[in-house]
Image 1 (cartoon, rainbow, N blue to C red):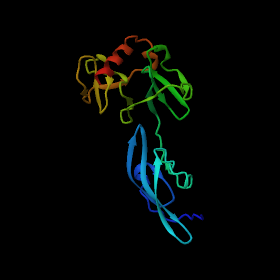
Image 2: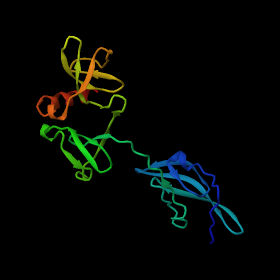
Image 3: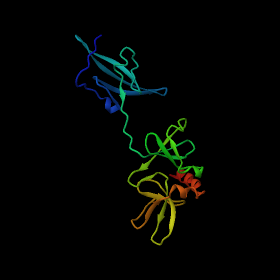
Image 4: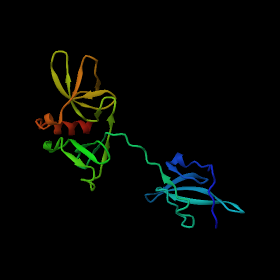
Length: 206
Protein backbone atom coordinates (compact mmCIF):
# COMPACT_ATOMS: atom_id res chain seq x y z
CA UNK A 1 0.00 0.00 0.00
CA UNK A 2 1.28 3.43 -0.92
CA UNK A 3 0.67 5.55 2.20
CA UNK A 4 0.90 9.30 1.73
CA UNK A 5 1.24 11.85 4.53
CA UNK A 6 -1.18 14.79 4.63
CA UNK A 7 0.17 18.33 4.94
CA UNK A 8 -1.90 19.53 7.90
CA UNK A 9 -2.94 16.49 9.94
CA UNK A 10 -5.89 16.85 12.29
CA UNK A 11 -5.37 15.01 15.56
CA UNK A 12 -5.59 15.41 19.33
CA UNK A 13 -2.37 13.62 20.23
CA UNK A 14 -0.81 16.58 22.04
CA UNK A 15 -3.62 16.43 24.62
CA UNK A 16 -2.23 13.02 25.61
CA UNK A 17 1.44 14.02 25.52
CA UNK A 18 2.34 12.89 21.98
CA UNK A 19 3.10 14.36 18.57
CA UNK A 20 2.59 12.88 15.10
CA UNK A 21 2.29 14.09 11.50
CA UNK A 22 -0.70 11.98 10.50
CA UNK A 23 -4.44 12.29 11.03
CA UNK A 24 -6.11 10.41 13.83
CA UNK A 25 -7.54 10.65 17.31
CA UNK A 26 -7.25 9.10 20.75
CA UNK A 27 -10.77 8.41 21.98
CA UNK A 28 -10.06 7.08 25.46
CA UNK A 29 -7.41 5.49 27.65
CA UNK A 30 -7.64 2.26 29.62
CA UNK A 31 -5.33 0.59 32.11
CA UNK A 32 -5.54 -3.15 32.72
CA UNK A 33 -3.03 -5.32 34.53
CA UNK A 34 -0.70 -2.37 34.95
CA UNK A 35 -0.58 -1.77 31.16
CA UNK A 36 -1.98 1.49 29.77
CA UNK A 37 -3.38 1.65 26.24
CA UNK A 38 -4.79 4.50 24.17
CA UNK A 39 -7.77 3.54 22.01
CA UNK A 40 -8.41 5.52 18.85
CA UNK A 41 -8.17 5.60 15.09
CA UNK A 42 -5.91 6.69 12.24
CA UNK A 43 -6.78 7.87 8.74
CA UNK A 44 -4.82 6.18 5.97
CA UNK A 45 -4.43 8.22 2.80
CA UNK A 46 -4.62 5.84 -0.15
CA UNK A 47 -4.26 6.77 -3.84
CA UNK A 48 -7.89 5.72 -4.32
CA UNK A 49 -9.51 5.03 -0.94
CA UNK A 50 -9.67 7.12 2.23
CA UNK A 51 -9.63 4.59 5.05
CA UNK A 52 -10.16 5.01 8.78
CA UNK A 53 -8.70 2.22 10.88
CA UNK A 54 -9.26 1.59 14.61
CA UNK A 55 -5.93 1.23 16.44
CA UNK A 56 -4.46 0.85 19.91
CA UNK A 57 -1.30 2.54 21.14
CA UNK A 58 0.71 1.53 24.18
CA UNK A 59 1.58 4.22 26.75
CA UNK A 60 4.95 4.57 24.97
CA UNK A 61 3.17 5.62 21.78
CA UNK A 62 4.00 2.40 19.94
CA UNK A 63 1.13 0.88 17.96
CA UNK A 64 -0.16 -2.43 19.21
CA UNK A 65 -1.25 -3.15 15.63
CA UNK A 66 1.96 -4.26 13.91
CA UNK A 67 0.40 -3.85 10.47
CA UNK A 68 0.87 -0.08 10.62
CA UNK A 69 3.81 0.20 13.00
CA UNK A 70 6.17 2.11 13.00
CA UNK A 71 4.59 4.40 10.39
CA UNK A 72 1.84 5.41 12.81
CA UNK A 73 3.66 5.29 16.10
CA UNK A 74 3.28 8.37 18.32
CA UNK A 75 6.27 10.35 19.57
CA UNK A 76 6.14 11.22 23.30
CA UNK A 77 6.56 14.91 24.08
CA UNK A 78 9.57 15.30 26.35
CA UNK A 79 9.13 18.39 28.55
CA UNK A 80 12.03 20.82 28.66
CA UNK A 81 13.86 20.62 31.98
CA UNK A 82 14.81 23.81 33.78
CA UNK A 83 17.76 23.32 36.12
CA UNK A 84 18.47 23.10 38.94
CA UNK A 85 16.20 20.24 39.96
CA UNK A 86 16.34 18.28 43.19
CA UNK A 87 15.86 14.56 43.74
CA UNK A 88 16.32 12.13 46.58
CA UNK A 89 17.43 8.52 46.45
CA UNK A 90 16.03 5.53 48.34
CA UNK A 91 18.04 6.52 51.43
CA UNK A 92 16.52 10.00 51.40
CA UNK A 93 19.79 11.71 50.46
CA UNK A 94 19.07 14.86 48.45
CA UNK A 95 20.95 15.79 45.28
CA UNK A 96 20.94 19.00 43.29
CA UNK A 97 21.07 18.31 39.54
CA UNK A 98 22.84 21.30 38.01
CA UNK A 99 22.42 19.97 34.46
CA UNK A 100 21.78 16.66 32.71
CA UNK A 101 25.25 15.32 33.57
CA UNK A 102 26.24 16.77 36.96
CA UNK A 103 24.81 16.76 40.46
CA UNK A 104 25.81 17.71 44.00
CA UNK A 105 24.81 16.01 47.23
CA UNK A 106 23.21 18.75 49.33
CA UNK A 107 21.91 16.76 52.31
CA UNK A 108 22.84 13.26 53.40
CA UNK A 109 22.69 10.93 56.39
CA UNK A 110 26.44 10.79 55.91
CA UNK A 111 27.04 14.48 56.52
CA UNK A 112 30.55 14.35 55.08
CA UNK A 113 28.96 13.59 51.71
CA UNK A 114 27.28 17.02 51.64
CA UNK A 115 28.86 19.10 48.90
CA UNK A 116 30.31 16.11 47.04
CA UNK A 117 29.96 16.25 43.25
CA UNK A 118 28.91 13.31 41.09
CA UNK A 119 27.98 12.49 37.53
CA UNK A 120 24.26 11.84 37.14
CA UNK A 121 24.92 8.29 35.92
CA UNK A 122 26.92 7.42 39.06
CA UNK A 123 23.85 6.06 40.82
CA UNK A 124 21.92 4.87 37.78
CA UNK A 125 20.61 1.91 39.80
CA UNK A 126 18.92 4.18 42.34
CA UNK A 127 15.19 4.89 42.34
CA UNK A 128 14.86 8.67 42.34
CA UNK A 129 12.02 10.74 43.78
CA UNK A 130 11.49 14.38 42.87
CA UNK A 131 11.95 16.95 45.62
CA UNK A 132 9.85 20.14 45.16
CA UNK A 133 11.92 23.24 44.47
CA UNK A 134 10.82 26.86 44.83
CA UNK A 135 12.72 28.95 42.25
CA UNK A 136 11.44 32.18 43.81
CA UNK A 137 12.94 31.43 47.22
CA UNK A 138 15.75 29.35 45.71
CA UNK A 139 15.04 26.61 48.25
CA UNK A 140 14.09 22.94 48.04
CA UNK A 141 11.45 21.34 50.25
CA UNK A 142 13.01 20.60 53.62
CA UNK A 143 16.10 22.72 53.05
CA UNK A 144 17.63 23.77 56.40
CA UNK A 145 18.13 27.52 56.72
CA UNK A 146 19.16 30.11 59.28
CA UNK A 147 16.47 32.58 60.24
CA UNK A 148 17.96 35.79 61.62
CA UNK A 149 15.67 37.77 63.88
CA UNK A 150 15.81 41.44 64.88
CA UNK A 151 17.20 40.67 68.30
CA UNK A 152 20.26 39.11 66.64
CA UNK A 153 19.08 35.62 67.50
CA UNK A 154 19.30 32.91 64.84
CA UNK A 155 17.47 29.61 64.63
CA UNK A 156 17.47 26.65 62.26
CA UNK A 157 14.24 26.17 60.33
CA UNK A 158 13.20 23.95 57.42
CA UNK A 159 11.55 25.26 54.29
CA UNK A 160 8.16 23.71 53.65
CA UNK A 161 7.09 25.59 50.52
CA UNK A 162 4.90 28.55 49.64
CA UNK A 163 7.15 30.92 51.58
CA UNK A 164 6.60 29.02 54.84
CA UNK A 165 9.15 27.70 57.32
CA UNK A 166 8.88 25.45 60.35
CA UNK A 167 10.99 24.08 63.15
CA UNK A 168 10.41 21.30 65.66
CA UNK A 169 7.08 21.59 67.43
CA UNK A 170 5.85 24.58 65.44
CA UNK A 171 3.27 24.92 62.71
CA UNK A 172 4.51 26.19 59.32
CA UNK A 173 4.50 29.96 59.32
CA UNK A 174 5.11 32.71 56.77
CA UNK A 175 7.85 35.07 57.82
CA UNK A 176 7.59 38.82 58.15
CA UNK A 177 9.90 41.08 56.17
CA UNK A 178 12.04 41.89 59.22
CA UNK A 179 13.35 38.32 59.39
CA UNK A 180 16.15 37.40 56.99
CA UNK A 181 16.73 33.95 55.50
CA UNK A 182 20.16 32.42 54.99
CA UNK A 183 20.55 28.93 53.51
CA UNK A 184 22.94 26.89 55.65
CA UNK A 185 26.10 26.28 53.64
CA UNK A 186 27.18 22.75 52.79
CA UNK A 187 30.38 23.20 54.80
CA UNK A 188 28.37 24.23 57.86
CA UNK A 189 25.99 21.29 57.46
CA UNK A 190 28.94 18.95 57.92
CA UNK A 191 29.41 20.38 61.42
CA UNK A 192 25.78 19.89 62.48
CA UNK A 193 25.32 16.16 63.21
CA UNK A 194 21.76 16.68 64.48
CA UNK A 195 20.51 18.14 61.19
CA UNK A 196 19.73 14.81 59.54
CA UNK A 197 17.61 13.62 62.47
CA UNK A 198 15.70 16.90 62.52
CA UNK A 199 15.24 16.77 58.76
CA UNK A 200 13.80 13.24 58.91
CA UNK A 201 11.38 14.37 61.64
CA UNK A 202 10.38 17.32 59.44
CA UNK A 203 9.70 15.05 56.45
CA UNK A 204 7.40 12.81 58.51
CA UNK A 205 5.27 15.83 59.44
CA UNK A 206 5.42 17.69 56.14
